[in-house]
Image (tube, rainbow, N blue to C red; front, side, top):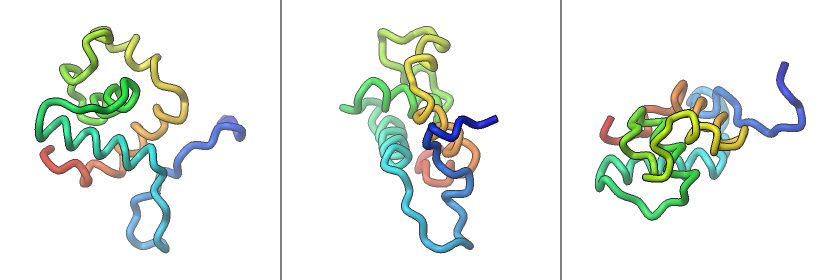
Length: 99
């Protein structure tokens, strides 16, 4: 059962047949960081943003050096950011430029 106090992004946020929705800034940022990592191999993003992008890309080599353990890196993200990673993986991978 979902915790109603946690504001998680909608799973269908990327569907084009619905009226224009505002994409949460966290999702936009994770996609931006993921594309930057793919294009340049580096980013000035925060630790959490970089971890989220690494999970979206399924590229653990993009994790910050201090988070070489996958579970430790995943645990670093809060519930909101984990939900954003899941939404992008399920419905937003077409926004990743160099898959």
